[in-house]
Length: 410
Image (cartoon, rainbow, N blue to C red; front, side, top):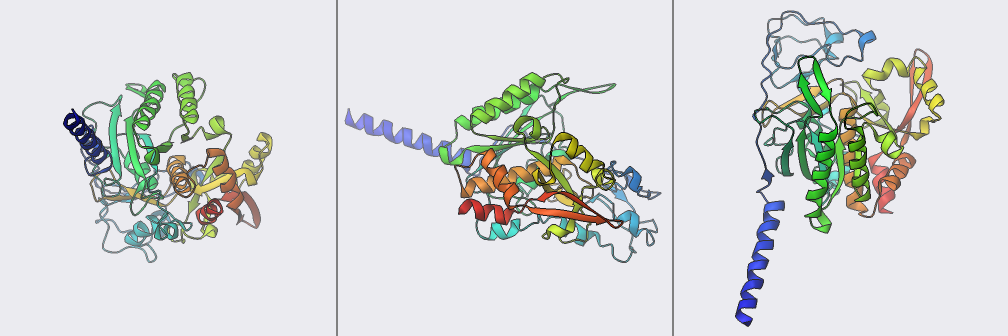
């Protein structure tokens, strides 16, 4: 009888070991590997001009996948300064003085604001689970393939190729060179928040609610020291949308389970307000002074409308956490080693940044909560004032990851 008990114990130990290797080793659970996207757009005949009045449009100078080699762009520095481009962009031999796409791409990989200095000290989000719910992912991209522990799909057509959004947000969160928390474990649910129809897109957040609940199910199977602590969802929901009640209830379940759900609806779900920052491609991402209002809301910020809206909402600038958004280089969906530079971003790029910083915070202070994190993030952030046309505007407080982590360690 004792031999049977010993054998059973060995079998059980082996099962636990195999399960652990499957979960945390090289064999991640990958439900499907979407094919790479194809963004081959042929020869570009005319380079569009950038219109500052239309800054809310992020695709004014979208050069991804284009061949510009036959164009004379030597006098188009102003327009190229606002260009989005990728590994598939083919440039002319002669470029404007001061425009170096290779350098811009490289600088854009830096998450900035001292994050890399934290990585050098071993603060990488190691041991922290970070979940992303977004569009189909290029699972084998070098930025995050070694961190990817789970990839599943909910409400995704079986033939879907990788999309631009998923690789970007995943790499901003946990990318090994562009990410805020390159040591965090990545759990990814691919999901469309509705259905594509002939007339456009019909929102349905019941699928997002199911995705959140799936993450909670997965989290129950993880060891205490490897739990998922934060979910990055680069979308928001409004009361009139289908599935609104379901997604709100799912977020509440996640909160009760101890997860921080970072989304565009962060104010509605937690009472936290953030905004995204812009940066000239040539400015140093390490310096808070390099940042200003993001391109899509700059006209609002510098017209005085931003301050008026804050006052009407009862908010002060010191309650707004500002995080990087524009001029970011991310993983591209076009290939495992391809990158793309997005000159104009959106909250979609800010949300995984916040999630990454929270993962760093969880590493140094496992007992942290979203409320204590946000309070500490605002307390250690740097006030941002920007002068335009002789006027000075206070926009909020720029997150300072180094000061934040130091304060949590103390």
